[in-house]
Amino acid sequence: MKKLIYLTIMSLGVATLVQAQPTPQLLPQISVGIKGGANLTALPTQDRFDAEGRTGYLVGVWTRVGVVGWFIQPELYFSSKNAKFIDKNTGAENKFRVNGLDLPILVGRRFGDNGLYGRINTGPVLSFATRNKQTQDGPYNPAMLKIKSQGLQWQFGGGIDISRLSIDLRYELGLNKIKNGNESSNTRFNNFNVALAYRIFST
Image 1 (cartoon, rainbow, N blue to C red):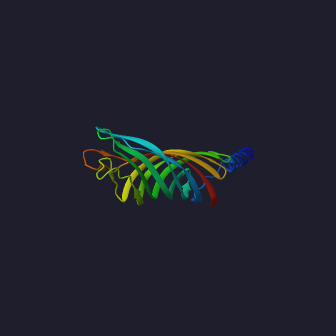
Image 2: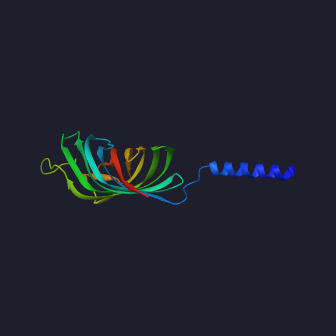
């Protein structure tokens, strides 16, 4: 009889402990929102060329599909990237602006609780230039850049989620080489960007 009582008490205790443990969210949680922010284009240079980064902007939408802390986050936004490319030998300058669509596909980890979360994420970015405006300083400008209509970058970054608002800080590494006017040198589009996002709804 005593053994039966002990077993009953132990069973109740185990059941209570199991009930007290948080149940992991196994079903995917889907969130959708909008975002906007600023970017700073940085062009690595060599030899006779120099560059000055300038501020641009980005605005678009995002969605996040997450399970047990891990997530995939595709985004689509319009961006304007600006900088100045300089030929130090001739003094020729090229103030350029590239407008287009960026499609990041990020994988990351989310952690936190009670409406305050941190995130780290990384992934590729496909870029599609819709407008490429460059200054033509004279009949021939060696600082002109041969910018392709499509590009590939890789993003690294993180963010903070506070209720429906998010702040993101990212670095974008250009993977495509960009030739200058006389093809004696090449550069890449690297970008820093900071954005404010708003979650419209989530499941």
